[in-house]
Image (tube, rainbow, N blue to C red; front, side):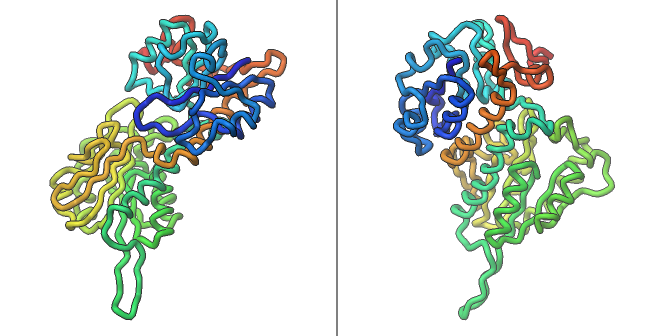
Length: 373
C-alpha cells in the first residue's frame, strides 16, 4: 500500500495533507509513504523532516507512481496523477459542488474520489471532520484579521490620560468558526454579541460570555438542518432578522460573518444600506466571501472600503495559518484512514455509512447521491 502526498497546486494554498507526525503513523500501519518535494515548505515543514519520518521524497511523477491512495488538501488535477494505480483513492477536500468538472474527470479516469468535506457529522467521525478543524482556526484568524484592520484597541483600558472603551464585536453565524471567533474576541477583551438562525446556539453563545441576539416568536427560528448545518429561513424570519440586525449592527465596531449553507451560495446577511449605518473605521470580516459572501460588496481576496467601513474578504483563511491547519487536516486524514485499516489486507476498507457519504466516484461513474439529485 503506497500513499502519495502531493504538493498543492491551487494558487495561494499553503497547507499540506501530511506532516512528519502522520507519516510516521501511516508507516506504523504498514504503508509506504511518498511525499512530493517541497510539499510542506509553505507549512514550515522541510523535505528532510519527511525523510526523517520514513517517507521518500521525490518529484511529482515518482511520488504518485504506483500510488494506491493520493492525499491532498485540495483535489489534484487528473493530469498530474499519471501513474497512480487503477482505482486509486483520491482523498482530499474536493469541492464537489463548486468543481464538478474535476469530479467527472476523476470518474472518467477510474479513480475513487473521497470528499472529506462530505464527512457525516456523527460522533465517531468527529476526529475526521476537516470542516470543523479548519473552521476552528478560521474563526480565530478572522478576529486577528479584524484587529489588524481596526484602528483602535480591543480591550477597555483605564489610563491616567483617560479610558479607552472596549471594541464591540458582533459574530453572525455560530458554527465552529463563529464560536471560536467569540472565544477569541472575548480573550482580547472585546464586548461580544452573536446571532444565528439555530435556536440551539443561544446557550452556546451565552456559555462563552457573549450576548445572544435572537429574533423571538417568529416561525423558522429553529433553523436546524441535517448534520447540524443551518437551513434557509422563511421570508418572515428573514425580515424580522434584518430589522433586528440593522438596529444592532449600527452600534458595532467589528462584525464577523461565518454563515454557509452546503451546496448553495452563502446567505446574504449584511446589505449595503446596513453597512452605511456603521461608524467610519468599523471593520467587517466575511468568512463566506468565496461562496458568494454574506456581505454585499465583499470582494474575494481584497480589503475594500465602503461608506468608511473596511470589508475584509481574504481567500482561503485556513491557509493563512498553514502550519497549524496542516497539522489538524493531516490528523483528520490519518484518523479517517486508520479507523478503517484492515491489517490482513494492509489497506483501509470503508463501511457503508461513511463510505457512501464521502465517495463521489467509483467504477468510472459519479455515484454520490448529493451530486445525482
